[in-house]
Amino acid sequence: MFRFIVAAIILFQVGFVEAARLKDVVNIEGVRDNPLTGFGLVVGLNGTGDSGAAFTNQSLKMMLERMGISAKTAISVKNVASVMVTATLPPFARQGSRIDVTLSSLGDAKTLQGGTLVITPLKGADGKIYAVAQGPLSIGGFAAGGGGTAVQKNHPTVGRISGGAIIEREIDFKLNRESTLQLALKNPDFTTASRIVGAINDLFGKGLALAEDSGTIAVRIPNDYKKQVVAFVSRLEKVQVSPDQPAKVVVNERTGTIVMGDNVRVSTVALAHGGLSIKIKEKPSVSQPGPLSQGETVDTTETDVEAKEIDAKVIEMEEGVTLGDLVRGLNSVGVTPRDLIAILQAIRAAGALQAELEII
Image (cartoon, rainbow, N blue to C red):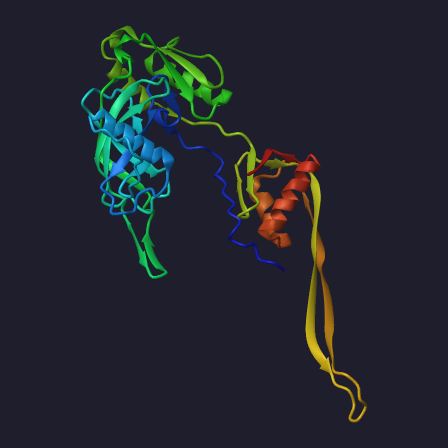
């Protein structure tokens, strides 16, 4: 009998869901990060920059012309590399504040070690400039080689500048101007939304919160907090709520990982599991002719085929068995993770698995 291999991770809860803070369940509309991107040049590399990227040479020529330096001839240098600069603009960020930036090589640069990013504007999705980045970068590793031997640590073509961008434009969002907060559930669910509404109304008074759908809850700011919205949001985030979970089984066939929720139920079903193991061995040999027979030496192969069938066992699962019953039943059959995936698919096809089966 096979033992239940640990590689198949079966996670299940203990019949109830612990309460979670509201701040871990929902997002407040308008309070969000915004991605920023920009194209820049890293200079000062020790011959490890782009060797033949046309856009690098063109960008370097345009930068020199903006500085008043005429570059009529073709430019080809190896101390410059083109990079894509990315950053995240946090909510309520103010002008003059600094944010971290990440630089990723666009050309064939070997390493960005020792480079300095030249002033680079960072734009949002609307095409407006929200920050400007510049400064020396750190790659947290190195790359060196010679004579056909190379040594590399971490990823030398990606770097980071801590506090490398200065915010120049702010997002026009004032929390104190809002009269109603829109809460967006991270995992939309009607039951969870109803529980959140009940918890908020129990704390602040009935009629304050209203669920618009399974993923959106409108919360009216009380009159006592009209000028203290931050204090109201702080109390709101601490509200305890028990999120509901749908019956779902997630299967990753590549790794043999299976995750099930406690709400998974199985209808009455009989399950048989068995396997056929076939082993084929080939042994090369040489056939020698007899003495004075004038025959030829012939290469031959001896094949040994062994087939072994594992006895199947049949188990019956009654109506409404829980996840624990299902796991214990399959474990008694002696299935492997790969077999368990096939069994779950067969139970689902038979209509006995009362849960959503998702294969990733």
